[in-house]
Length: 289
Image 1 (cartoon, rainbow, N blue to C red):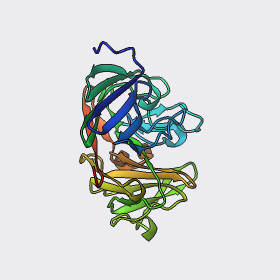
Image 2: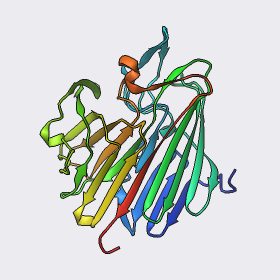
Image 3: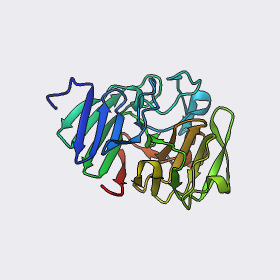
Image 4: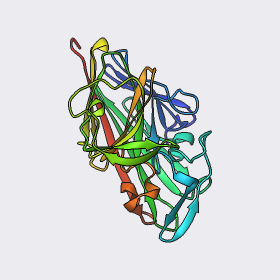
């Protein structure tokens, strides 16, 4: 255990890349490259999180119930939203396991409470000059097999000239309760198979068939971020409320509301003691640096 286990916020840096991570929520609070913010602190309970982990799954659970192997399980709302949202990790306090100038490892333990999940999670952060790596893992500590998923919820700056490249195969429309409705062909304005601006309007859609790579270009910041995701992240969400200075590109191992979909929407059934892991990397570049 690190000697700085009682510190609430931890900084790691290398070259011009610096991030600050909070034990609360295991969240990145700030992320800059040569002084330029490539993540925005706009999320979480205090709107101060720039990226947070989705564990043991992401998004909402419809009706706050699920059925696994013929047994019903219930959830209680964990935010002001009437539906249980984004798991527990982003609301819990993580422990510091290791910390040096360029890397940080956090751990988290969750007993059954507002959800029926019991698990342990680990999160690693490392920086190396131009590259941020974030690794997330979860282990089922319950007594029964349960469907698990992972994801990341970063908040990126949305500038007037920003463009996004994020190929996918189809999109899910949205219905009441911020839940996915039906898969459709991706409309042109949301087809990020070639770089295009993120529309400045309400967007809250799941995309399937992610290529595992994306890139964001901010001409105003003279900055480019290349995002790579492990193969388990075959889906992503795009969220922006409209009239905002941010958008979210959220790698997910499953579809939102997977608990009510066939094959749990891509969630992985973990037996007691089994684990799931995945990583996201963000590589930064800028002309003149």
